[in-house]
Length: 97
Image (cartoon, rainbow, N blue to C red):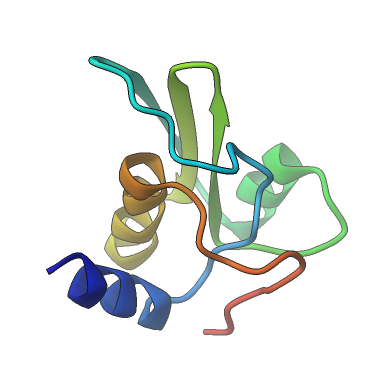
Protein backbone atom coordinates (compact mmCIF):
# COMPACT_ATOMS: atom_id res chain seq x y z
CA UNK A 1 0.00 0.00 0.00
CA UNK A 2 2.79 2.44 0.91
CA UNK A 3 4.52 1.66 -2.38
CA UNK A 4 1.30 2.51 -4.26
CA UNK A 5 0.97 5.79 -2.38
CA UNK A 6 4.58 6.73 -3.11
CA UNK A 7 4.20 5.95 -6.82
CA UNK A 8 1.03 8.02 -6.97
CA UNK A 9 2.73 10.92 -5.23
CA UNK A 10 5.72 10.80 -7.54
CA UNK A 11 3.36 11.12 -10.48
CA UNK A 12 1.86 14.25 -8.97
CA UNK A 13 3.86 17.29 -9.99
CA UNK A 14 5.05 20.46 -8.45
CA UNK A 15 7.33 19.70 -5.58
CA UNK A 16 10.93 20.42 -4.76
CA UNK A 17 13.35 18.61 -2.48
CA UNK A 18 13.61 20.36 0.86
CA UNK A 19 16.22 19.01 3.28
CA UNK A 20 14.59 17.20 6.15
CA UNK A 21 15.26 14.34 8.52
CA UNK A 22 17.31 11.53 6.98
CA UNK A 23 14.95 9.08 8.61
CA UNK A 24 11.34 9.92 9.13
CA UNK A 25 10.91 10.99 12.77
CA UNK A 26 8.61 8.94 14.95
CA UNK A 27 6.54 11.25 17.11
CA UNK A 28 3.43 10.37 19.02
CA UNK A 29 2.04 13.69 17.84
CA UNK A 30 3.23 16.33 15.45
CA UNK A 31 1.85 19.56 14.01
CA UNK A 32 1.14 20.33 10.39
CA UNK A 33 0.98 23.99 9.45
CA UNK A 34 -0.66 24.71 6.09
CA UNK A 35 0.21 27.91 4.23
CA UNK A 36 -2.11 28.63 1.31
CA UNK A 37 -0.77 31.02 -1.32
CA UNK A 38 -2.75 32.98 -3.89
CA UNK A 39 -0.42 32.33 -6.83
CA UNK A 40 2.79 30.77 -8.16
CA UNK A 41 4.85 33.90 -7.40
CA UNK A 42 3.72 33.96 -3.77
CA UNK A 43 4.65 30.33 -3.07
CA UNK A 44 8.08 30.91 -4.65
CA UNK A 45 8.68 34.01 -2.51
CA UNK A 46 8.14 31.77 0.52
CA UNK A 47 10.46 29.10 -0.93
CA UNK A 48 13.20 31.72 -1.53
CA UNK A 49 15.39 29.47 -3.68
CA UNK A 50 16.33 29.88 -7.34
CA UNK A 51 14.40 26.72 -8.24
CA UNK A 52 10.71 27.43 -8.99
CA UNK A 53 8.11 25.17 -7.34
CA UNK A 54 4.34 24.71 -7.10
CA UNK A 55 4.61 23.78 -3.43
CA UNK A 56 6.92 22.49 -0.74
CA UNK A 57 6.99 21.02 2.75
CA UNK A 58 9.69 21.20 5.38
CA UNK A 59 10.26 19.77 8.84
CA UNK A 60 11.41 21.61 11.96
CA UNK A 61 11.39 19.43 15.06
CA UNK A 62 7.92 17.89 15.30
CA UNK A 63 6.32 20.48 12.99
CA UNK A 64 5.83 20.08 9.27
CA UNK A 65 5.06 23.27 7.37
CA UNK A 66 3.59 22.93 3.90
CA UNK A 67 3.00 25.55 1.22
CA UNK A 68 0.78 25.27 -1.84
CA UNK A 69 -1.40 27.39 -4.13
CA UNK A 70 -5.11 27.79 -3.38
CA UNK A 71 -7.28 25.18 -5.16
CA UNK A 72 -4.26 23.12 -6.30
CA UNK A 73 -5.47 19.87 -4.78
CA UNK A 74 -2.79 17.78 -6.50
CA UNK A 75 0.06 19.73 -4.89
CA UNK A 76 -1.76 19.89 -1.55
CA UNK A 77 -1.98 16.08 -1.40
CA UNK A 78 1.62 15.67 -2.55
CA UNK A 79 2.97 18.04 0.11
CA UNK A 80 0.73 16.55 2.78
CA UNK A 81 2.30 13.17 2.01
CA UNK A 82 5.73 14.68 2.61
CA UNK A 83 4.50 15.62 6.08
CA UNK A 84 3.32 12.04 6.65
CA UNK A 85 6.11 10.09 4.97
CA UNK A 86 9.10 12.44 4.75
CA UNK A 87 11.23 13.19 1.68
CA UNK A 88 11.63 10.86 -1.25
CA UNK A 89 12.91 13.26 -3.92
CA UNK A 90 16.54 13.30 -4.94
CA UNK A 91 18.45 16.57 -4.23
CA UNK A 92 17.77 19.21 -6.91
CA UNK A 93 15.02 17.11 -8.46
CA UNK A 94 12.05 19.12 -9.70
CA UNK A 95 8.81 17.68 -11.01
CA UNK A 96 7.42 19.20 -14.18
CA UNK A 97 3.78 19.99 -14.78
